[in-house]
Each structure stands twice: as C-alpha cells, then as structure tokens.
Image (cartoon, rainbow, N blue to C red):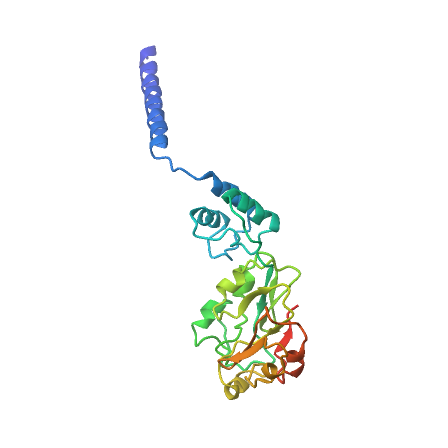
Amino acid sequence: MQIQDVLIPVAIFAGLGILFGVILAIASRVFAVQVDERVEQITEALPGANCGGCGYSGCAALAEAIVKGEAKPNACNSCSSAGIKTIGEIMGMEVEEAVPLHAHVMCSGNCHTAAYKYRYEGASDCIAAEKLGSGNKACPNGCIGLGTCVAACKYDAIHIVDGLAVVDDTKCIGCGACATLCPKHIITLIPVSSKYCVECRSVENGAITRKHCDAGCIACKICEKNCPVGAITVTDFVASIDQSKCISCGKCAEKCPRKVIKLCD
C-alpha cells in the first residue's frame, strides 16, 4: 500500500468536514432565532419551581408571556417582593406587589361527614374518578380526596387527611398549582390575611345537601343576618365571604349551625 492510498481518503474526509462545518455555521446564522434577553432575565427573577400555577408550562414560558405582554409582571403568586420588583425594572414599569395568597380547600366533606355513592378502586387520581359519576362521594361539588392536588404540589404543602385535602399553611406559597388541577374547583387562593372561610361549595338546596354531607352549607342565611358589616352573603344555596369587607369578628362562625365557617389558618 502506497502512502497516497492513505492520504487521499484522509484529505477527502477532512475536506468534507470543513465543508459541512462551514455550511452549519452559515445555517446557524441564517436560521438563528432571536431571543429577547429580557426573557432570560425575568426567568432568573422567578422562583424556578415550574409549578404551572400561573397557567403556563413553567417559569420560562411565563417570562416569555410577560415580555410579550400576554401576562402581568406579577402573575406568579409565589414570586418574592424582590423578584417582582426586579421584573418591573426589567420591563421598565411600576409593578404593584401582589397580595400574598395561600391555597384553601373549600370543603368539609371528609370520610366521616360525607355520604358515598360507591367504593372506588381505580387510580388515585381525582380527575379520573370525576369521570365516573362525578366521583364516589354523593356531593357533586365536594373534594374527591384522591390526591391530584398532592401530586401537583412541589412544596409538600397539601395532604389527604380522612379523605379530604388539607393545606399546610406553613409550607404553602400560593403558587396555585393545586387549584389549577382540582376537577371540582374547590381549592381557592385567598389572601394570607383572611381570617374566616366557608368550607363548602355545594350549590344544592339545603335538603339535598343534608343528604350528601353532615358538614355542608344549607343556605339558612343565619350567617348573613348576623354579619355586622355585610361581608357574608348566600347565593346559589351557599354562603361566601367578601374578604375585603370582613372584620374578622367571628360572628358568622359562631352562629353557623353546620359549623362550616371556620378559621382559615
């Protein structure tokens, strides 16, 4: 074998390598996607949990939406005050600091108080169970209690206790991931300063609610009549509290015959 028999193939491959390298370099410039540097800066200012509570797939997706004007700079409930301020500076605007929120389960129907329609033995997922006759509990508006919210929480702030989701306020950062995935929409983000909550979302009349749960609101309006500031009203057979009016006197909780108005913490 002569030396040219080795050098010629090597030279050909080297030439092809250089040619393809040049082509890739040109292609990378021609087809390069221009990324707004603010997206990366805002992503760094966000918590980085990628919890999805804001409605976007993750912090980077939210950052892109903020830059495009599709989301508010304070859209992340779990972002710190310093983070929100930084985002405002990046966007060149004044950003109002968001009211601190935490999740709360507006249901009292645990395995001791709620009536059941059938015994469920499927996947431990509320969304799957909800498709089977709206879940195994008789109340169509109550917590199914299979832990979809637990799986969604990245902070170990929500657990199932006696068939009912319960939030640990010492861990909850108010990201809203649990509320987003709850098929019954009974997990609500409320101000951390909230004192009392109506832990029921049943919109059935009192007689039906009594059959479904021993701890459901029966729309008796006793709470509404006893509130001195008009902060609690009964609509569609269920009481609700306007936290902006509530003075935390506790009269509604004291008078509630079903004891579904409770301290939020």
